Image 1 (cartoon, chains in turn green, cyan):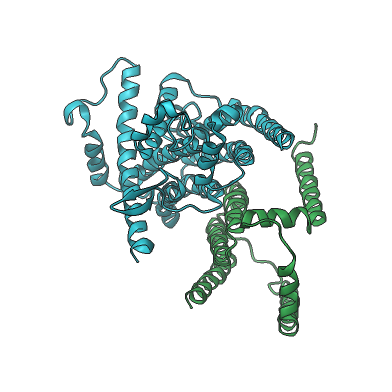
Image 2 (tube, each protein chain N blue to C red):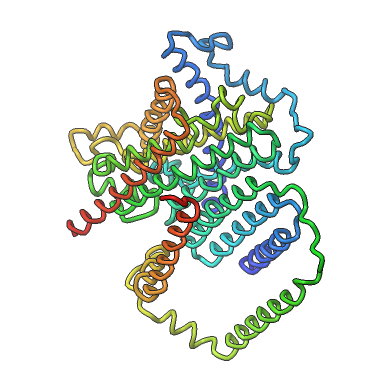
Length: 172
Length: 340
């Protein structure tokens, strides 16, 4: 009961702040709402018993990436509102398309959840895990079952880093 | 009921009040120590040897006019001091001041909570604290605070990397992320981690100086260049909040350094039976004593060293501390595997 109330309050806050992020005129305020949004997502992780993910969420997203966003927003002065484009409806078609795609995806997830709920969750849970504790479990899964995606993601970050250095420093 | 609600609340109240009193007296201690370093007396008027000076300061700050500049971003301007202060205080939730003791026939843990990701919690909360400084500079809508806040955030982000890497090598040695677990590991391995991780210890302390904007890394508050720093436009109690947050962060860094590197609440040589009598000094007193040593060094450094130049600061962070921290981490991993 208490958990359900907490979940709905947190979920409402996440959605509310997400709307504020895209609807606020002032860019800095928008970034701040994004931080609040990430903090509530972290709260959701705590509610699910994934403290490690919650802490990493705050550390990486709220404390790291958004700080850099804020840097960029502060340095490129966006005080004046953007000029209106000639065709105000140019994004509407794209928006409807994306919304439809998300809706289909959500429907597919819901349908899958109804048809095969027990087997899917059971097979994931029944895998024997030789370690106890949240952090150890995440580490274990990352370095065994999800090793290839993990390494690919780290390669991607490395490429991004090298790209940023090359873009910023033209003569090395 | 009592265990679930009353005792944790009491502990929170005690820790918060102790922190705030400690913070105000840190200010006095700093003024006194710097005065002694410069052959002065320091504050002497309010109370014997000036010991009531913090109270006079607090009253002064509270009755001062609270100004919001006309061109400031009002909401963010108000929120910034709060955003600086809150992370500095909630970190104390996971700092262990002592083990479980028996008080009035009831076991009481001398820490508010012991979560299994305690150290990461501290790092992540501290990383949120940087918003207070950035937003203060931005919301003031004034050029010097903006410059100072850009300096501060660049500095914090750079040194955070080195500090977090040293923490990883400590975690490797201890095998746990829980603050209490790290002290227990030092008890079981019979050594303070300052001795088996000396490089991490030094990097952590230097990084701590930089992350709390203390001398010699106090560029965000360089009065000569910035007419004050990121809090130039603040006055009264809101200015005081920034000030208190800085000192609260100093206490946090000292407590974390004590816990990770100096054995937390443990007396020196906890296994030597000839030194059993050291256990008569309560555990929290050892903790406070060790933290006090760090706080004193913080002040001592400020009285001794001149300020770094900005490019020197960045060079030290990125070209010396981070490579050293990575090398230390790799070495720790190799030694750990070799010993297994």
